[in-house]
Image 1 (cartoon, one colour):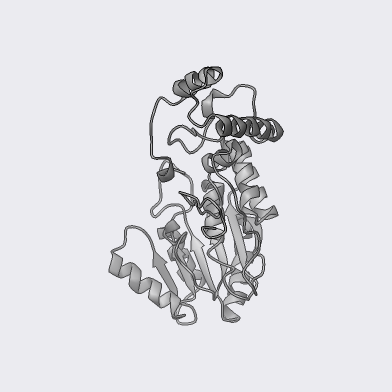
Image 2: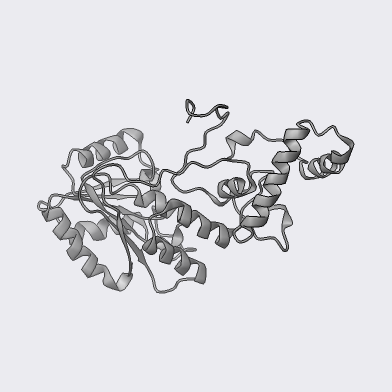
Length: 291
């Protein structure tokens, strides 16, 4: 990108799934977009399914077949310990359940979470990377920076607890080798309308931008002038960022023309624009740090 552009970019924002605010910045024209929509050579699209908790025996049967084929599995939980306030699956109970269902010496299970000592996490990760353990039970500490091609199954417990960006990030931990990979979203039957929509879009597409667009509609675009990553920007009452693309593009074209003719907005006819910009720009931030 740096070499191909006449004017190299000052900031390069890279993401698998844009948060609503970042996507809104592209819609407003604050960011130019380059999309890499091809998988690396030899990789297959990840198959995603949604199971309710009642299908757990079916899930375990599938996991055993994958392990017998020489593959490995991630199981991710939203919580480390059981919470009285939130009715979600937790890692500690989940780990005990998995060890009972996949007992040694035939199966070996690793555990990783954010409250472990760094050296303990490292040992657990190395056991899994080397293939000495078949299943890794973890929290979201594995959502970035983990690349193990032999892992073909990502099970996300209480998937309704996670946002779309995080679900897509977690799914991206598998599908890194030539074998078919799977993402299995586990949930209770008690789902809100929004949670159901999130799980549905995860099952129907692997496209990060399509997922981000749904996230934008569900959560709102955030504050493009501040740090809020979701919610309604500029108190828009009528305009809809996701639907009014043509109007946005028209406004963007006019803005580019104005800046081309008057880069510093010093002409009298642009004084109203300066006034409005000052009204909107009450705070000053380092935009590149919060894109």
